Image 1 (cartoon, rainbow, N blue to C red):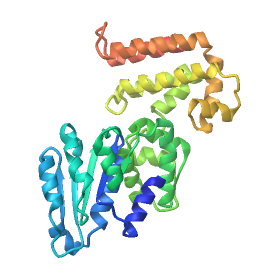
Image 2: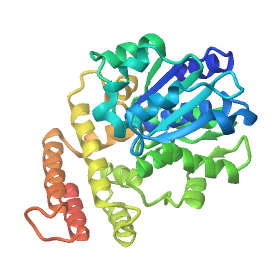
Image 3: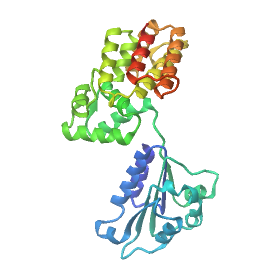
Length: 333
């Protein structure tokens, strides 16, 4: 976040680089920086002649270099944005000669998503010297809730821990998807709202009572009635509750529980840090550990792996409903 603020701040101050190479696994910030450049470097009057967007699948390195070398028309500079530049990955090193001597009146932006340059190659070294390289790294699941709170805090909103976790469990770590849902909430809800699970249920369609977050909690408590009620809801709403996600989240929970059993320091702060979870959820692990000794946890992980294989059609011809119900029975008994 600090690196992004620095990039934006430098551009606002007029400290503009001739090349911005935006790369990495998380496309959200690549798009944000690229969009900022597209919207802010040139005045509206200059954009018609001096701002161009090209796509990696439709352009060659030669096309890009040719466009980058031209002079702006009646303006201080031109902006050339290459979207989906990862489609040029096989030939990207051909950009070396331009990167070593870029046109000073051109701002070349390359959105190189899901990939990154090899630091040992000439292109990386050339761009690092003449321009700017930004790597957008994927957030871990346990970092996304904090990201949600920071984004909302910057817009004068707050969110309860459970509500943030519901978004993470439903949408995963895709920041673009989460951002779109947050934008919807901020359109509907007034500033200063503390977003809770009811807001998520009413406006995004994630059930506050029947979701993987609640299933994990019910399983940890060995609540047979509640667990069965939740999976029956999943069976009736398979589109919003895919089996692969349920298995993945339960596997993550029991893997963390196995680690919990092996901890010497079981203070809340130590558990939260070691397991990579919010301290708010630590009590769930103490409860689950009493219900599932280490041997049972190892057995449950084996059940989950078996269910994952069968869900992909290997070794058994079962419906997802049957796999889920059988899995839950094995875990709880």
